[in-house]
Length: 159
Image 1 (spheres, helix red, strand yellow):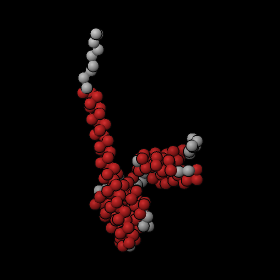
Image 2 (image 1 turned 90 degrees about the vertical axis):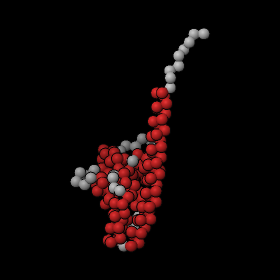
Image 3 (image 1 turned 90 degrees about the horizontal axis):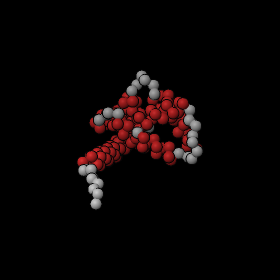
């Protein structure tokens, strides 16, 4: 794929998007985008991330909760899963995520809330596994670095 020329706003939005969703999520979206879908990626980075999420009045933690509530109310279970993980990364507890979803029950209905709870349960399990894998990688990397430091230097001898 040829190098893409992105607007300054899209570049700024990409930085915000990576901070919120993580590099792996953003890279997967970019990797899966063909020329047609890049129109959507660019506008999303410009408007959603570079304009709205970059505004200072609400922090990322509040915006994550709002995104979860709105996608729950619309029964957008794929988006709910993504925003549950975003909320957890932004410091919301699993219990607080559940409370956000209970709000959906009151204002958007029982079935929107039920769908959101079901998707959230899956997302929480996935998030826990992702965190476990990240910790295991970090431990393995630390052990490898420690083994290199602990290994005695080999002496050269003349024979």
